Image (cartoon, rainbow, N blue to C red; front, side, top):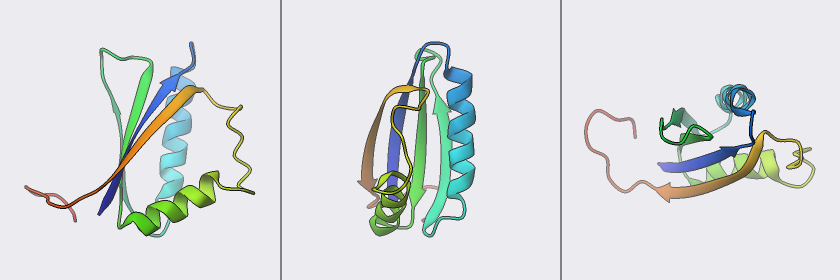
Length: 102
């Protein structure tokens, strides 16, 4: 399994718009090959930051989605966004504990 954690730093006054956009994009991921699940997570002490924890079958599926979503010809325009910036980290899962999907 491969996971990404993305932190979306919202522009002032854009948190609700950012939530809607993130949820719409998350719903669209459900039909992507290799997509497993995604959680939108928030911290009370960082109200301008929305984060997402996303799981993929493997790194290949993650890369294919990223290339489709953000690559050349995708139509993605980084200037039209409710976010100041987005930081993403990605990890390969090597061990799981508890009642979790793998």
